[in-house]
Image 1 (cartoon, one colour):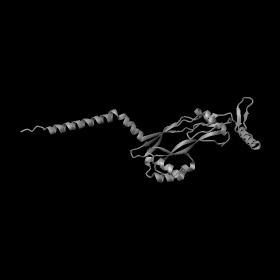
Image 2 (cartoon, helix red, strand yellow):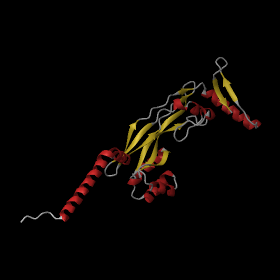
Image 3 (tube, one colour):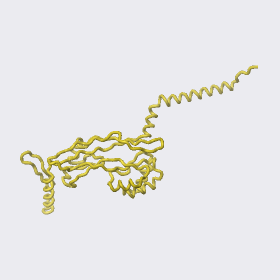
Image 4 (cartoon, helix red, strand yellow):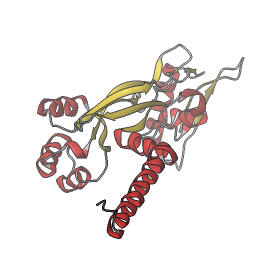
Length: 254
């Protein structure tokens, strides 16, 4: 005699059908509706982008003597996820870079895939740190503004900040032309959590600037102004040397 399915069997089949429909609906939303969103999240977890400062243009005197140049230096950054012992790493970094250990320890324990440790370190610091071969610690090339004549014409040239933005003098006045275009570097993380640094968009150098300043005249002016200040102790001194035929400023000091 044939046995017909009982009510319990029908209920079981119905539950399985509902469960299968729910799974199918969930998969549809994951793979179709929200696929772009999840793909973007995955990409953000696998790569981090940061800006690379461009070399600023050279500033010359009227005879093409260099007054301001940009030189390549190392900046140090960390990928905290790759550091197994942040306290130990902080101690090593503190000794090589002269940064308080507690400050470094906090940075290395951040839940981030990228954190600056110290930007624009000296060649000595860079070499000392490179020898340690610390996991999770990397170098990025940046540019640092250097003034070959040191303080000569400092008030005329001005200065730049850590991001190579002009903050005074000619550096500020012509910042848009001299600064150049910022580049872009990417930190890629593989399936094992290892990071690789790649340059996605190289920075474009800034334009050079030739001034009317004559470095020899500038040197003499500053020397004489200093001597007069020591001798007479005035409230202030300002001196400008100009070409009588063109009106060009050859030097200025105060």
